[in-house]
Amino acid sequence: MKRLSLLAILMALALAGCHKAAPGTARDTPENTGSDSRANAAPPPAFKPETGSLVSSDQVPLLEQINRENIRVVAAAMPGIVRITAGRQADPRMKLFGSEIPFHLPFGSGPSHEYPPNSPSYGSGVVISKDGYIVTNEHVIEYAKDIEVQIPDKGSFPARVAASDTLLDVTVLKIDATDLAALPWGDSDKVQVGEQVFAIGNPFDLDDSVSKGIVSAMRRTLPELPGASADEVSHFENFIQTDAAINPGNSGGALINIHGELIGINTAIASTSRGNMGVGFAIPSNLVRYAVEGLLKQGRLVRGFLGVELPETIDDGVTAQLNLGTQRGALLAGVLAKSPADLAGLLPNDYITQVDGHPISGGADLRLIVSQLPIGKEVVLDYIRDGKPRTTTVKIIEVPPGVPGAESTDKGGGNPKVPDADNGQPENENVLNGLQVSDLNDKSRQKFNVDPGVTTGVVVSGVQDNSPADDKSVQPGDVIESACVNRGTTRQLTGAKDFADMARDLKPDQSVVLLMRRGKVSCFIYLAPQK
Image (cartoon, rainbow, N blue to C red; front, side):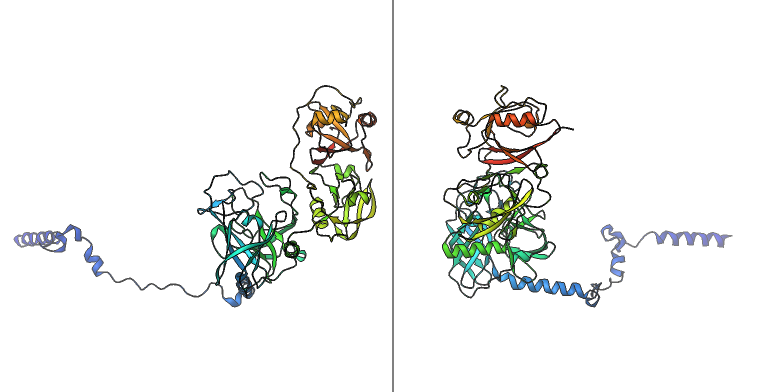
């Protein structure tokens, strides 16, 4: 029994010693707790980064080839793209990274700010000749006091403006340099929607930037820029639309195809954020080339002139009422006296479908094509009048000095509605009810400040609230020059009595198209019975 008690005491002492470390050991130092386990732990295995490819080249040969060709195309074109620095107080529509970067934002440019004088602006340009000619946008160097061109691997050169055209937004610069890498011209008329393109330039002051995309659309016309004048919105536009990333600073840079050919000059973006939103615009290369050759040959562009006026707006329903069918064309709002169009017998409401073999898709297309026709050339012009196709011959002349643009942003005098009755008040219930007109004479001209260029028609003297004319924003002072009631038949209005006779015969279920002028602006409005 004693032996068992002694054994129990020895076992208890042994167990107690297991829970108490000897003095001076690591266990007596709390901060060293666990250090023994780390010191005695096995070293981690050496880091081995993964190598190889998830997909081998022979598995994606087409992508490999596309990748190589993309690199080849860009590398070949890059030396022909330059950086342009213009020393001036730049356009305050864009300021990034402390410097001005001009770029057109046709869908709204945001608030304006005041910037210090002489702040430089940056843009892009394209070398078009080995001996130092460079093309860019006119707005890149607008108001520039001095211009500097930086060429990859060749340094910087002072530049001078050789020639410039504001309406096309094209400028040709000249530097004293030779053996430059000029980009070859591509044929923009052969560009197709969906083909791959590259945009090269200096966005956000970042040199030699490239983006890739496709051609999204052709023959685009942009809305007017905020604050633009009548001349500025008469641009001869025919843009290529692309989703290749274009940003401020890309202005004047190149849009190239897969052959490295210049097919456009990047010019504008549609954006609500001041940056790329996938909708960019470039001036087609054929139009740029036409401008460059004309500017360098004569110092200015000599444009062809037809002498027609185009409407600012055309209401839905107008083409059907005029019996124009689905054929595309340009509807005339007016014809200038003694102009080529007048001498050829063209009239307001004529619908031009083809000029010199070129199909016409709209008013902007007509203006652009006529502007490029040689002076003195006689061309065949196809048009529709009263629903019937016709043909005439027109001799193109140069645009006379001082001739206003065919389109204008002038919105008229904004006269208030006049409730008093006047001549020409319709007696029947029809779409002309609530519209009062007067003869166009000295008295009405003075009262409503009618533009001196308006020679025919009747003056709107009153518009009843909530009438069909009121719904179309017709105002006193507007001049109604013609009307189309029967499908395809146009009636020129000679006075208030003529208007009253037409209104008296108009049935309640009939619609009417009015050619209306406000200031220098013409438009076609469609008045239809409410169903």
